Image (cartoon, rainbow, N blue to C red; front, side, top):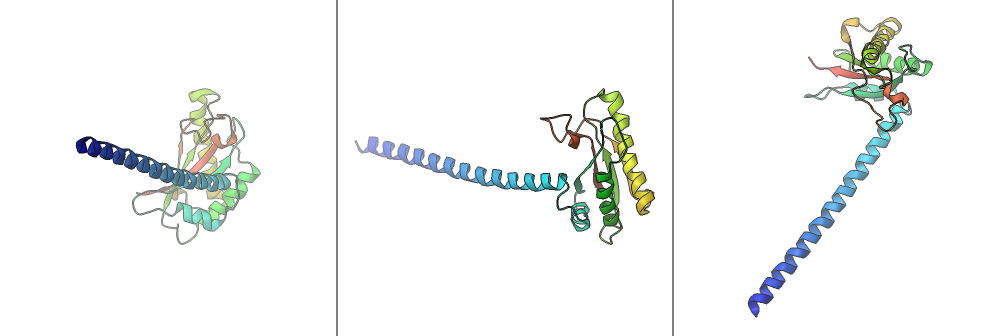
Length: 181
């Protein structure tokens, strides 16, 4: 009889322990999800152009010791175009100021051009490169950034930000990546 009681108590303890572990895991997952949601909202705010300052750009582009930093600014383009919009020029003016700061003066940067999937790869690959090049040209001409500090690459439609709406403006963009040599 005591053997059955011991097994029952052991089973009950195991079930309770498993339940507590599940509850703890759920609470941790909820906390992590909440933090991730808050971080995503902050990123979305930056993408919408809110709170973008020269200092926030400097902080986002300053690399860590082991990895490059990617600036999530939304420098967008009209469909099928590599012409900068007035809003994009205003953002790039802040980027130009940031690239001149002492914190970033020693670094090079890769400007990655992106396109939405309309038009196919044959059209989007050169278009995304043209977008990256237009940003580089603007930074060199308007802000006297040394062209040797800037590189450009076209990513086509391979890295969509908004996969729910593939034609969304944020998929027609450039991203600036710190180049760690």
